[in-house]
Each structure stands twice: as structure tokens, then as C-alpha cells.
Image 1 (cartoon, helix red, strand yellow):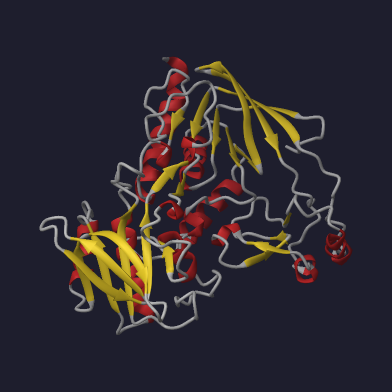
Image 2 (cartoon, rainbow, N blue to C red):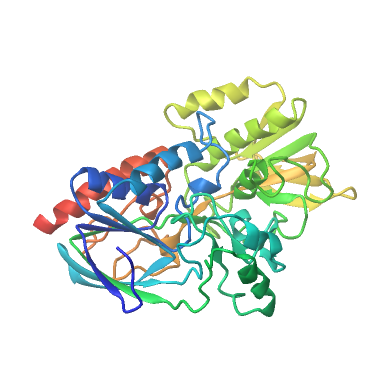
Length: 421
């Protein structure tokens, strides 16, 4: 279906809001159940937070493998309609009979685009790359892995900039359409799955841990991008201050989590994520010391084996202590003060790079859900909401990728049976 400037009306069994791993799974599961699904995503690409990762745990394989399989299943499936650059404006109706108004933002690129890169090569406008948490620059016209459709996209803040004309002139396929306007689409559906995912807790709020003050304090999501081959350093983990190699690194767990002043809950995945990232470091620096400061290590089920493998590394040191303070030394190394949660003893360790394991904040906590859908005190969707909207993945609670996939399958069943309740 082509979206026209006058707006479209789509009828489907299910609307899935959010194109991350949970949303993609929900749309695919619905289609294989014989139902029609509309999948929407506010970014120009699918994959959500997962596509920003370097590797999954515990198998340590690149997430793009699983995502590409899902992307192929979506592209070849007539029962799934995908709209990127799209957000929900309004929801009316009730279980089994919803009418949802969507706003589709302009891409400023049409289907003539062949992703030949010529427009990007000549583009003089560079901005902070939000995909990489501002660790590098991107052009004002750019392409993302998992783009849907597989086209370039122009930054709306710069399409009127006189310098942008060079990008347009470089395209020999007439793929630019700078007159595109936001469009409205109405979806009539029987069920809604809300899978808008999460964002990392703002580490700048942790003024005692030095993020934003010291160059060599980064977060766990930033380390994922540093470790990725397509990331800002082509996969090289080094000190941001000078590009130096790492001999000692500290991972500070529960950075803002399980803290009544920040996130009072455990995000569930941070321990395993730091263990995974310790392996990234070990692969690049076989002799580096790795220091992990923790309250307690939470690796349930099969992840306990993952934890035990790291314990056998003689240069991985586990310190039972909550990170209390981080100060910079004269050589831009960092001094971590940690309080032992059992004895109350204060210890200090000097490292060259600190990684803060910040928690997961549901996007629903800041992006208000429609139809007065209730949330708990932390912004997670409550079960059995009167609105009939069903959450999936981290919209419901902090979970890792495998659990998000399982949760999405259950969400589809709930959403499609709600019409009969």
C-alpha cells in the first residue's frame, strides 16, 4: 500500500507500536497466526536497542544475525505492513474495535534511492550521531543498518540549509523530495501491542560517579558501540581521553539502580551485560586487569554458567562493593571508591577506564501512552489495563532479549483474544 498525501485508512487485526525485537516478533507471530498486522516505528530503521548492541549474551554472537532473519520474514510477508518514522497521535475505541491515528514524518527521500552513497559523500553538514550516543558525527543525509525501507533518510533540521543542495545535486536518480510533508494514517484494528522499549538511565544524574565530568567514564551502552565494528572506533576499545590502550578497567554495577534517589528497581540484565563486556575487553587486551564492583551478581538460570566462566579468569577481580565515588587522578586515570555492602569497609582502586552499568528506563515512562493506559510507579505498563493495550518486552518490565521475544509472543495472544473477552 502506498501512503498518499491525503491520508490512508488501513484495516488490520493488530497494531504493533515499536519496531524493536519485541515489536518485530509480535508482528511476525501475528502473521503466522493468520492475522494482519501493522508495525510502526518512530525511527527510520527497525531493531530498536538490539541493533545497537555488539553481541548477545551468553552465545556472544552478533544480534544482526537474528534481526536480519526477522527483517527478511517481514519483507516477504503480505500480512505485515511496516511504517517507519511513524508515531501514534490518538487512540479511540475499545477492546476489539480501535481507531488509531498515526503521524508519518517525511523521509525527504523517495523510492528512486539506490543507497549509492553519493549524496552522503558530498554532504558538508555533520551532526552528533545519536545512534552512537554522540561519540562520533554523521552526515545530514544518512543510511542505517536495518533501514526500512532500504533507503537513505534526510535530517529534517537541515533539508532547508543551503549546504544541503550539494546532496540533492549529487543524486542522479532524482531521489530527493524536499517538499514532503507529514502525513496522517488511520488504522482500524482489533488489538494493540505496545512495544516501545527502553532507554538507558541518564548517567549525568549520578554526580558522584563522574560521567560528563571525566573523559574516561563511559556507560555500558557506549561500550557496546565502541566494541562494534561499525561503531565510532571501528570496534577498538580505548581511552576516550587519548585513544590509549587499556591495562586496567573498572565496571561499576547498579549505577543509579536499586537506589531510592534514582531507579529503585534492578534492571535484571546489567550484570550479564557487564560480564559480556568484560569478554570484549579480554579479547582485545589479553593481559588487562578487569575489576567488577557489585552489590550482588544476578545471573539466573543458564547465565550462571556464563558468570562462572568469567570467575575462572585470573585477571578478572570481583569486588563486593557499591560504587560510592569516582575521582580523576593527574594522569586522567580514575580512582573508584567502593563500600563493601557486608562489612562497610571502604576500598579504593585505580583504573584507566570506568564503565557504568546504568539501568533500563521504559520509554513509556516519558512518552505518555494513549487511552489513559495506567503505568506503575516506575513507568512500566500495568497488566490487564482497562484500555486493552497489551505491553511487550521492556514495556512491561526489565528483561533481556530472549525473554523479550517470548513476552512478545504472549502479548499477541492476549491482544488478539481480548476482543472476545
